[in-house]
Image 1: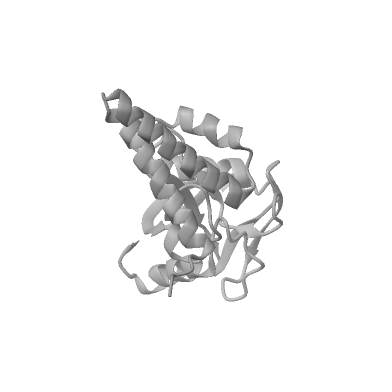
Image 2 (image 1 turned 90 degrees about the horizontal axis):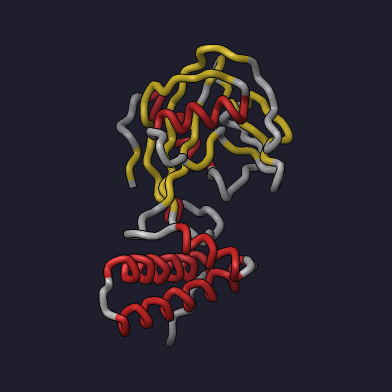
Length: 209
């Protein structure tokens, strides 16, 4: 009996096809191989646009910018605790709650990236204390996504500033980590939060997929 693939498995196949095509186009010197890699890229783009209801032009433009050897994208997130409660932001796009953070920018170190994101999203000045985990987004129940992403979660210490809602957020609050609000699952899942809190309280080693 043939195997039926679920959405996450189909997304991973499309991610892999896109990565193979991008890397092949970067290194091939053969005109015929280039045609094959371009066709493979087209197949991956059609799979991704069909699954995620994205305009094909959007993916084509992104893939033109993202050249070279294909690697996962990097998302950075901050664990900030105050009197046992966890700082979270409510995202404007899906109304779910997440840890402060976002994409790491070119030119930033991982610590600089998460400190900048926290400042922009919450108004707080923070300093990274330690890395809590390196998570593969494909492995922990996030909704399917067009790109392969590594998520870096850091423990951050508050240095100053005042809480302020950014234009990307609806609300900001310290919440009980044992009673989490509805999460923005595309950004964070309960397992990642609970494992991070446990790592802090029990001084466990860094999580690494």
